[in-house]
Each structure stands twice: as structure tokens, then as C-alpha cells.
Length: 179
Image (tube, rainbow, N blue to C red):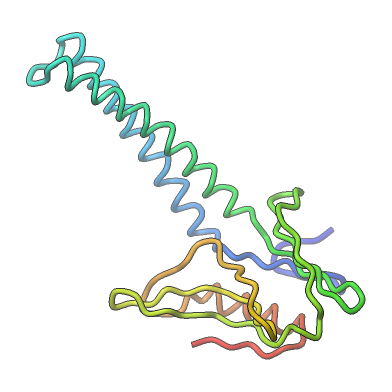
């Protein structure tokens, strides 16, 4: 059985999204759903004339925004939950490296690259608005495979990215690079 954070000789699972980040977005989604439900309830009360200061038209607007908010935030919760469960599996297969994006037991996407083309694993940074946006990539001779599911911004490199970068580089036998 494969456990998170370890690897067998045949493959390595890398987590592109830190658990805490995924949980934060799930909690935000539930909070926004609650706010949207309250907004819809206030709209219904306004339409019924039980809340002063609102016209019926304003009440219908609140109901519409509340319903749209619930629907939209259910998708946010689903996205965050799936992002937290996503792993990228690296499995050598002869002269190729099979890269699979997996959510639970489902394979979402697969790429095959020549093992000779893999030159490094890197934490990328791009300046933006006084901070940097960080990502995790596998560098190839003719491009890169971006493993980033959620771009992290801040003034310091996320430790999770450094850890996963070093683990993957050691597994693949290539250099690790981080800012």
C-alpha cells in the first residue's frame, strides 16, 4: 500500500497543493454558501414585505444573488476538495516517464516524456504586485510540465513547494532549483 509522503521504488506521488490551502478554500466556500443563503432568505422576506427598507424588486435581486452564490460556491468547494486530493504520480517506464494527475483513484490526465528530456525540477517565481507568485515545474529540454494547481503568492517560497521539489528531483535523479 502506498502512503502519502513516501515512495516505493516504482513511483512517486507529489502533492501540488498543500493540505492547508485546500482546507482554507473549502472553508471559504462553506462560509460563502452560508452568506448566500442568508442573502436569499433576506430577499424572500423582502418580497413578502416582512423586511422594511426593501422593494419587492430589491428582494428578487437578493434572492437571485443568493441562489447564484450558493451554486457558484458549491463549485468552489468541489474544486478545492479535488485540488486537495490531487497527486501527480511519476512512474518510470523504460526510457519514458509517465506523469499522471490523479484525484483519488481516478486518472485525470496523463503525459509521457522521455526520461532523457527531464533536466531539472524547479520552484518558479514571477514578480507580481510587490510579491512573487510561486509554482512547481519539471523542466524539460524543450519546455516544462507545470504541476501547479494553485499559484501561491507571497514574499517567501512556500516550504511545501521546496520539499516536493527536492523529493521529486531526488527520485528522478536531476537537480532541484528554487529561488
